[in-house]
Image 1 (tube, rainbow, N blue to C red):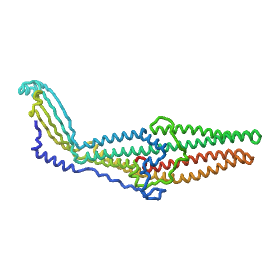
Image 2 (cartoon, rainbow, N blue to C red):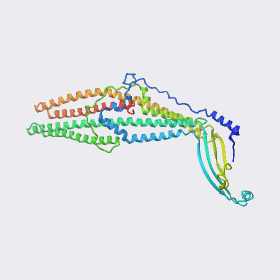
Image 3 (cartoon, one colour):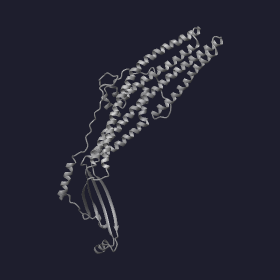
Length: 475
């Protein structure tokens, strides 16, 4: 059975050649980065040098072995990062599928059927007259090929969107990693702060014990009243309460950090103190335009824009005619005994169909309108990502600068207040100062030391913020 003889069909050949010519057309616009007003330098950073710490590997930026071990564990055990890696695998599978997008679909089919028409029907009379049978059998084994010609570049645009989405998931995973490294480092610095504050609270508790004993002795000697003893004991209780609060906070912070690592709750090793941990005074920030290449969230936002641009081409192509070419061939017979009798049972078919959408209840036009709106949304998100990145860096840089000055002032204040409490205790034992002056001086020292420790921790966190804001951590 032959429906079309391809080699003898000149009109069909002309039709195919015309199709191949038209297929050189491609709907949609190739992606071009939209204009973004990016400053030449960051606020608080008067430099146009392109050197930036964003290109420093995280192992070099965080050189302390304890912190390196924590980050390494987090990069293999963190659940959010593992999920991000699985999303990359999903997108990679779709990208592999695009390699076969231009190939035809091929299906095999084997069928066997029997039909017994009515004796009073035309088919029934014909069967008895010509075949001498009451039923008709049909046996078929065939392969069917179906191929849609990419006339308007729809498949190419679909592949383009798929590849952009895949790259977007890769950048999203990098963003998860940069945030994870920053969170682990900040969690570690939080523990160092709590350790330092706990040591301060214990020192103040010991000092309070001494003051309580001195005032109690003076009360026994009739030099002060019971009120003085109660005030001193209240100050001691404040230091004791702070100690238990800090011990509780340390356990909770350790559990949170272990969760980031993908581990069960437990202790976190720390071999250094807050004062001994080095703080970078100068961090090279580069220029804002480098965020387009260094920050994963900015790159992911732009790749989302690339995908949205490609989907406009897909939506446009849906408005134009679609050419589908089908071909099939195999073995066909009305008796099972003749089914594989060659070449008599051979057959093949070739057909082409051109479908032009006319009325689809406005679905196709709506799809195009939505695709264009989504591209506009992607442009806004891209510009927003760049703006957020520039602000993040600017905020972190000013923190690095001002916190260093604040630490100097806070350290000088602690020295001053320690001198004041020493003088207050000396004057108190000499009868030249009252107990309230001693308690006030002790309270001031406690708060000043706690503030100094917090500022030192904030300097470390600001250093991490600069590194993360510039896009460091995924290398």
